[in-house]
Every structure is written in structure tokens, then in C-alpha cells.
Length: 327
Image (cartoon, rainbow, N blue to C red; front, side, top):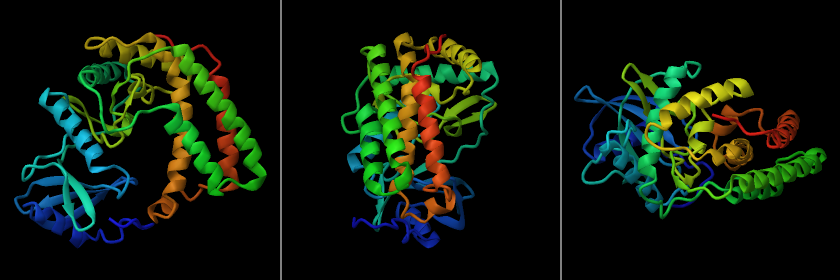
């Protein structure tokens, strides 16, 4: 596939329907674009009155082997009755090609955002995260990368410094505080000591957990990586320390019904948050030529945006010096 700054220009509604028909799914013409920036995701109504969700992957982000590993992990979880929405096996495959696009198809599942203020909801989510990680610990990814300081911190720092996107009058201040923050992340990782990296969901925020009367189910393993187990828990916590401690205790209470959480990993929470913030800015910047990104993030690149990022990094430097959460 030839690289293009506008990778989805050829993905018209007709192309989506033709792609589905190429694997035996006949749409009735109704498509609903779902919220996704990295990929393009559509709910498609079929002629048999059922619906599916089609995900068209951003070209050049993941290799075929890396996508296959994600799909294999999701299918492994589903086979063990862990409520993860796995890709459908159609014509003997989960990954399909149509023109320049790779795509997969998922069953449509409804749900709402979980009420994370409810400790019983958190405990329920924790039980299923414990089950996901129990399976994740059974094997290692061979193709998908790890979540580490280099890939989520040092490399995004280099990219942003080279990008020309940071205003010149803020560049020195941004560089200085980011260097302090990365030093803090390294200190946190040293305090945590050795931990076992396992296969993770990787992006387990509330938007990727759908709540139903039967409990939660997890969607979108697009960011599945190897890393510390706490990565899949901390994004479900509120920001204020006392409330975060209460929520963490509820999550871990459910989690440890299936897998013990290594307590030393709690020292990684603010370090992982710092890395995510750096990675997020670089992610938006790398995608800026995709028309969806300026429309969704019009404030990116403004003076105020980078001033806020500098303040945010100062707050993270301080947070990483505080005692970790307890549970």
C-alpha cells in the first residue's frame, strides 16, 4: 500500500459496502460511522436485518502479523468466556483486504458507559480484568510491542521536538519539564522493581468498557501491548487521591478473585499517566494531515495548548514524587 497523508480518501460508503460484500455480507445501504479517529469504524445493517461493525485499519500502523496477534488474543479470551468482543471468523479469516484497505468485522453489541462512581460496578469490572490478565499471562506477544519508557516517552519527545509544532518561545520550557518528567518515570520504574510484562488490553478507559445488565464487556484491543498489569486499571480511576484509593480498592477486590496484583506496580501509575500524556500529543501531531484530526482537535498546536501541556508535565513531576496509591 502506498503511504498517503489522507489514508481514508478512498473509503467511500460504496467502498465499505463493497468490502463487506466481498466477504459475503450484503448490506442494505445503511451505514453509521462510529466514533474512532485512529481507524474508521462503521455499523452496517445487512439485508438479513442483522447488523455488524466493520473496522478499517489505518494503513501502515500495524503489520498483518501484529493484527493477527490482536485477533488471536481476542479470540482466546472469547473462547474462555471472557466478555471481549472478538472479530468474526469469515471465510476462514478475521483479517480481510479490499483494494488498499485491511478490515475486520465484529458482532454488534450494545451497552452504555459504566458508572465508575459505583464501587460494585468497579468490582465487577475488576473481576473481568483479572480474568483477562490471567489469560494474558499464559503467553507472550511475539509481534506487538511493549509499553515502555522508550516507545511512549523518549520517542514521542524526539518526534515532537523535531516536528516544529511546539511554539519556539515555549520550546525550552517544554523540553526542560519533559526531561524532568521522563527522569521521574525512570525513578518510578526503578522503585517498582522487576515486574512481569503480560498481554494487556492496553487502552482500558471507560469508553472501551460497555455496560449491560449482564455486566461489562470490553471492546477495541487495537492498542493491545505487553506491559504491567496496572496499565489496565489506572485509567478507570478518578483524579483525586482519596477517591482514587477507594476506586482502586474496589477494582482490586474483584481483580484478585482471579489474579494477584503485584503491589509494587502501584508505583507506576503516575509514570504511566505521564507517558500516556506525552504519547497522546505526539499521536495527534502525527495524524495532523488526516482531515479528521484538525476537525476533532482544533486547539492542538495553539499557544494555550502547549502552555497547558507544560503545566500538566509540572503537575506530573510533582505527582510522581508523592507516595503511590494503596489498596
